[in-house]
Image 1: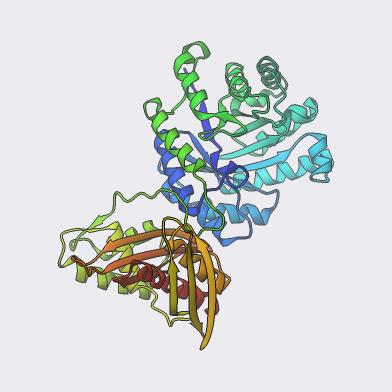
Image 2: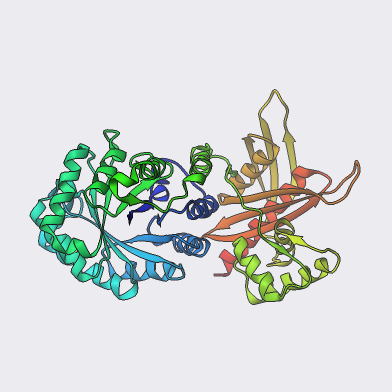
Length: 469
């Protein structure tokens, strides 16, 4: 029985149909890896440093699945993508190009001959860097079949180990798509030596049926999504292969026993509403797996800090190790949240560009929370007033209004550090700027004040680094 690869494209849909934060994309990749999908597809790398860091972070987080990233038909972009992806255990470069006259001429302004030459050059460049290269023929079902056959043959000769044809319009019936795949095997003999993949639009709600029909015709890879919006469903394709694989002589590596639970988690993550006006997101965080003690070496500690997402300088790393040793001498174990607090208090201590002057919070169960904030920068008093979903939300929005800066709030932690009525509260705020994490720590008997101080601490670190460049 042949193994059919399921390639998940959920993250490629993000930004178009739903929103995922940087941290949620890492968690999503871990869930897909645990589910057993063969390939996890990511968005491409643009000019933003965040794009490259996102690919690197996913590449390090995924243990078993192949990590695939699309490249542009451009040598500079191919090199940039490979530099971000090369640390993955199983990397794949994807060369995506249109093959129908409509898309080639009207979207890319290229004739068929020029597009064919660009495809050959790009696949050749990718193959020189990576052993696993995929060519994706966009809008293949509306292409001239003779030209499509020539493109697929050229891509295979240039080194593509997988070629994928897309029914972008989604107008084919299952029987028609099966016949289309069968004709490709007849007109492109080289397909017998590589994997043929399919990607079906769900415009007529037939993506699952068309994908399975293609498997029956010999396709070896199916693009689907755990949170399916416009393509085939990972859950449906995996369940059909599990139930009727004997008829198709095909099976997948997806762990069907975990399918419902993991797909449910991914669906919840993708469906969770994220207000664009709020610094908070409702994502998930993996707090398991990091416990350190006084017996751990400095290298182990710094690896754990890197796993949290921090990119520390050698000087800050030494400060974190010193602070950790002082705490570990008094405790048997130091967990992930305590490690966050150590980094926030020990690493990158900088002069305060923004200082808290005064704040007034109004909140209740019958009114919207509001914050009136006064900050001092360069001896000038800056004021902001904002409404929010709670006192902390309103306070953070007021700071954003004053500074004119918005950063992804990666995490917000609240802990009690003393007991009793006058207990001190500690907050840790993690902000992400340009893909890099900055954390701040605040302590007060007033939780709102502790949160404001933690946010300003992280913000000042970002400002200091930006102004130092």
